[in-house]
Image 1 (cartoon, rainbow over the protein chains, first blue to last red):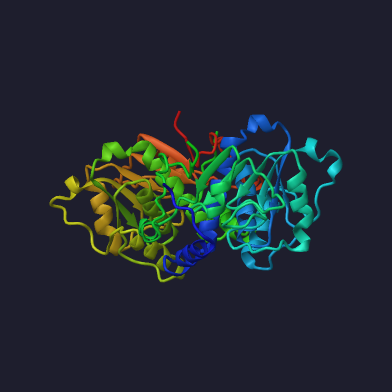
Image 2 (image 1 turned 90 degrees about the horizontal axis):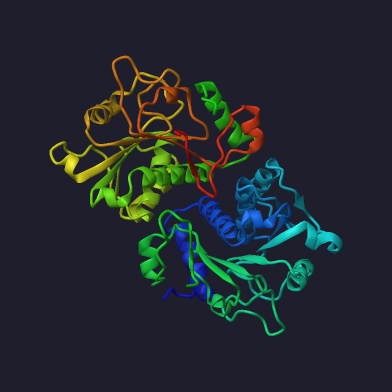
Length: 233
Length: 233
C-alpha cells in the first residue's frame, strides 16, 4: 500500500528534490499544477460545468503557486478559471505565474466574490490555500475564505491537503472543509487517510525511483503517460 | 490550416514567450520535453521497443535541453533512454537537467556508441540536436552524429526540426536525415511542409491565445487534456 507521509517526511522529500536532485521550483510546480488540472477534468468534466466559472483560491506559498499553474492549464483545457489570490507572494516566480494568468485573461481577484449570486456563477472551487507545511492556527486573513469553503454547497477540489486540516491527523475537531476531490502531490500525507470525499488522485509524476525507494513511498503505477493515478479502487 | 513559421517568426515567438509572457525556460522546456516523450510513446509503443534502448542525441542549445527533459519522462514511462550529449552547455539549467537524468540512472555518453552492435542494442533514436535557430553549416563536432542519423536503419524522432535541415526550405540538396516522427513545438516551422515521415505531432500546449492570434498560428485543437495533437489526418 502507498505510504502516507508525516509532515517531516513531506518537507524532507521536498528539500531533497530541490537540493539533491536539482529540480527547480518552476519545473516541479508546472508538473504539479498540470496534474491538478488533469485530475479536475476527470472528476468535473467540462460539459458538466456548463458556462460556470471555477474559483481557484490561492494561498501565499507553493500550494498557491500550484493553484496558479492549475488555473492556466484549466484555461488551456477550455474551462473558465477565476483566481482569488489575496496575499500575493513577493517573489519573481509568483509575479510571473500571476502575469501568465492575467495574459490568458484569467481574472485575479483580491477580494472574495459576493455571496449573492456566487453559487450560480461558479461550479467548482479549487482549494490551493495551504499545503504540507501548514501549521495551525489559520491566519486571520484567510478565515473568510475558509468559512466560505466550509459553508458552500459547491464541490471543492483540494490541492495536496484540505486547507485547515492538520497535515497528519486530518480534519480538526470543530469540523473542517470537505473536499470532493483531493489531489495528493508526490505522495499522500497522513491526513489523506481520513479523507472521505469521492475522488482521490495522486499527481506529480516526477519522483525519481531512488527517492521513492529511500522513503519507501510504494507509489502506485501511473497508467500509460497519465500524470495522475487514482488512489481509490 | 495551421501556419508554418519562418525562422524569424519562430525566434520572435520564443522571445515573446519569455519577455512579454514571463515564462521561464524551465517551465516551457519541461512541457516541451514532456510533449516529445508522449508523442514518442504514441508512435513507438513500449511493447514494440522490447528491451532495446532509446538513444537521445542532445545538441548544445535549447533543442538539446528538450531532449534531456524528454529522456527523463521516457524513463518515467518505463523506456530505457541513453543520452548522447557531446557538448554540454555550461549553464545552471543544463547542469541540473543532466544531473536529473543521471539521478534516474540514465547513462550520459560523451562519445557515440560503437557501430558494431548498435542497431541491436537500440530501437529508436531521438534527434534533439538543432532547433529552429539553426543556421548551416553543421559544426564539425556534430558531423559524425549527423552521419549516423543519415545512415542508420533505426527510426528517428526529431524534436522540432530534423537536424541539419534548413529551417525554412527543408531537406538540403545533398540529402538530409529522414525522421519517421517529427514533433513540432509551439507551431510547425516551414521545413515541416516537406516532411514525408509517417508521424507529425504538434506539442507544447502552452501558447497563450493572444499570442496565437497575433501570429495567426491557427493551431489545431488539442484533444481533451492531451499535450500533443496529430498534424496528419
